[in-house]
Image (cartoon, rainbow, N blue to C red; front, top):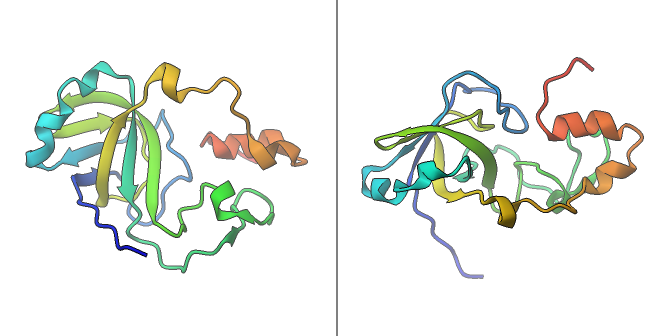
Length: 163
């Protein structure tokens, strides 16, 4: 197979150094931003006209060899295929998060809560477009068949809860 090369366009700044949430937490009031390299700042023009963006990043701190079967930590030991999960341990360690744009100032895109470690390499930013990216018939896949689907849905959505 051919080797692919990606170029980092910036770095993601978060308060997380040793653990991070499983999914973005929109109402997290800590500081989150994308520090875009100066040579790409012109590419931010009009990005602030969107409410949400996709943040695409390189998961650079994986220690384990990716497995094709994974057990999501909130799925009570159920094994699923890595492609049927949101596990960070993937054949290509590329992460994707949807976050709200709070403001853009210079080369910084301030966002709602991100689910990545501080210093994570930023690969790309794309606008989240309502009619293209919101699919009315989307579902929860294998989670819907779980005995505790409502509880698992809280984990999937990154909603903090006590049980």
